[in-house]
Image (cartoon, rainbow, N blue to C red; front, side, top):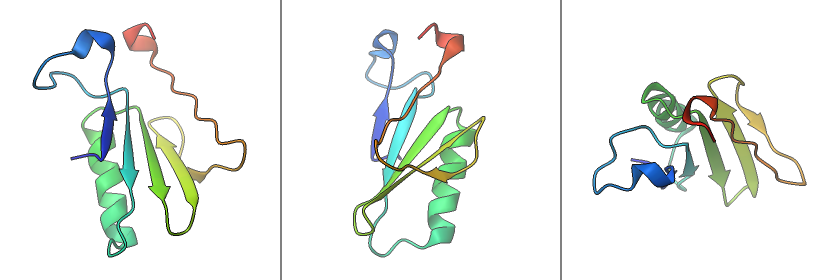
Length: 88
């Protein structure tokens, strides 16, 4: 389960029936890199196009998408979310 999941306005149902536009995963203090990789793979496997990983202790933000491997963001922290199949 992601820490934050963002859906389109059309997905406003009690239970999600489609994959989120993107998810945000916050790194827990006791979470291993392997566990984090598994979490990201799970999000991508369920159809999420972009996963944003936030590490508050290291003060870093990483992004991974179906089209681009994991990379660290540098200021300015701008994430482009492309979802052409949903008309967004």
